Each structure stands twice: as structure tokens, then as C-alpha cells.
Image (spheres, rainbow, N blue to C red):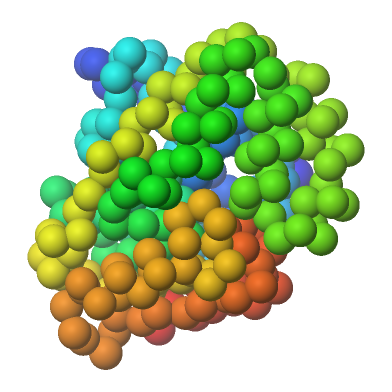
Amino acid sequence: MSITVKTVKTAAFSMDYFKFGQGENVMVILPGLSVQSVMGLADAVADAYGSFADAFTVYLFDRRKELPAVYPVRAMAEDTAAALQALGLRDVFLFGASQGGMMAMEIALRHPELVRKLALGSTASRVEDARFGNIQTWIRLAAEGDPAGLYLAFGEAIYPVSVFNQSRALLLDAAKTATEEDLRRFIILAEGLKGFDVTEELWKIDCPVLVTGAGDDRVLGGDAAVLIKEKLPDRPENLLRMFDGYGHAAYDLAPDYKAELQAFFLA
């Protein structure tokens, strides 16, 4: 399999994306913050989500190419909504992980016509100062031009200890390919998290929502998922599932994660 990265253009910006699968349902994945673009991992993502290919046509969107100097989560979400509209996508099954989950909540709130069901992975409805500490360390390492330190700090925060220890060499290899432009973009995207808060608006989300998290999430905290579920409308179709033991990266590591995600979307 070789997935082609494409570009959608609007009057204001351009944005890379890729798609795979041939199902009649449209699923959109919004990835979390990363040191380098996930576009280079298109084949690996398509393989990881191979079980979705029959029931879904899956799109994964990058952040816009032309980043403004200040780019808060809400602006990221608005640009992604514009990209969906430019491609004629609506009524989608939307899955956002980490920062992508924050964007997904914004899209569900501001553009409900675009979202049929919403799944949130290891995300938060607000980024408090106490939780911004890890992120601030990442920003400092990127600003210092230390991709190796950044990759290690990033990996240590998102992975359980055993996985991080096994991944050190791979993280250091990835760091060797990070460019100055990668680090510049990372700083802008990471700083965009500060002050994010839609907690008191979550009651307005009208579509079914699956909230997932992990009690040992060292980035945003396992309590963040619980808070989202508490603030959503009290309906049986809104679900909370915790994947304790897999840390912030539960959406990548938990063996039954994707099966539960697909079951929720197709229920």
C-alpha cells in the first residue's frame, strides 16, 4: 500500500491530508501535537486503521501549511472545518486525539452539521496552567534547537515507562530528521494550547460522544476525560471508556482501542 498525500486549498490557506478505505461512511482523524508532520506516516496509519477500510473512507488532516505567528486551538479547528467544507465533507465520524480532540470539540460546537458522531482520545476540555508544564518544557527544548531532548521529553510524557524505554533509540533516530522549520511549527502549535477552555460549552454538543482517557495520562491527566463526560448532556449514547496503563498514548497502544472506536461509530 502506498498512500498519496494530497493538498486542499481554500482562499486563506492550504492543508495536507491523506485518505484510505472505500466504505460509505466518512471518518475524519485529527491527530495530536507532534514534533513532525504525520503526513510521512500515511502508510503506517492506514495499516493501523486497516480494519476500518471496508466500512469507512478515512481522512486524516494535517495542520495548515501557512501558520500564523499566533494560532490558538479554535483557529486550528476553524481551518480544519473549512478544509472539510472545501472537500464537500459533512456528517462525518470525527475522531480527535489530544490536541486533535480539542479541535474536534470546537468543530462539534461551532459546526454541528459537520459531525455525526464524535470520539475523543486522551484530550481535555481545558488546558490549565498546572497542566501546561510539560508542554512548556517541550517549547523550551524546541526553541533551544534541541530535537533530541524534545523527542525524549515528549516520548517520556506520552508513553508508559516500559514503552518509552523500548522506544528511546527510535525517538533519537526520528530527532535526527527534525528540521528548523519542524521546530518552528511545533512551537506555534504547542503555544496554541495555552488558555484553551470549552468546558462550560460541552452541554451544547448534540451528537453522540465517546470519551476515552487513561488514569495514568501524564500530559493532560485522566481526570480530564471524566470532566468532559460530566459536562456532556446526560444521555445513554454519550460514553466514557478508560484505558488505564497505556498513558497519554492509549489511542495508539491499547490493543482493543480501535475495535471500541469502530463499534461506537457503527452502533
